[in-house]
Length: 113
Length: 115
Image 1 (spheres, chains in turn cyan, green):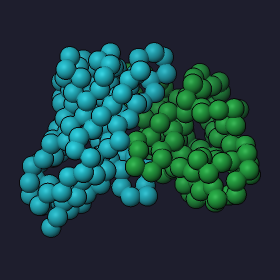
Image 2 (cartoon, one colour):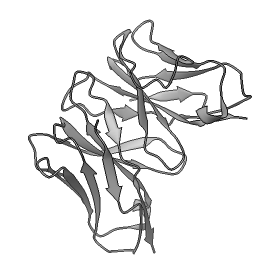
Image 3 (tube, rainbow over the protein chains, first blue to last red):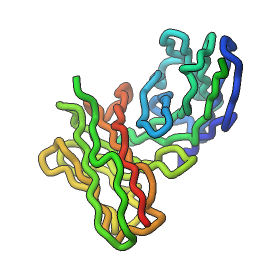
Image 4 (cartoon, rainbow over the protein chains, first blue to last red):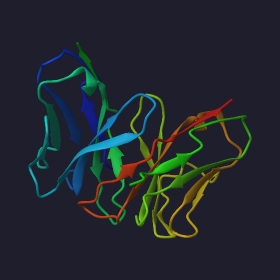
């Protein structure tokens, strides 16, 4: 059974800092890994999807990497801004034909002005 | 274009009552997923539809939970004899199809509170 762990559970940084969020998964036989952002009381917004054959994906100030062999993914946020404050969730696409997502508990990020 | 929509946005009910939660996926998306998110937790998979059929309902916690998608578009999650432990945010997601490179697009969720 796939298990996804995210550390730290919470992170507070001053504006402008670069930061890294960590995600680990127990079953390396994933199809892809997806990073989401969740604002309080809102749904999930997809940030980046890394397919199993890829090592990283970039979108603006965000860069996500994937190392299947070690069961790890990282989300790098450059030059953080107060608007980046949210909960960040990583999710692994399981094998099989349904491609359901297995989520971690998330990292609550606060960027202080 | 329109994203995934869910109604109602909030639902308060009493223990023992029946509730229905609705999901309107993105037009043309054949894959539809339901997840449940409890406070402080990540979403947990409940059920997956490919077209009209429930291809995987292994995440439904018990037989009080049931979901349908009769025409392959709108889906309804039904909960009978609600319990306080059912209180959570119920999230719906859709994708063009189930596949390795397919992003799942989530709706805003329905916040269910069982008193």
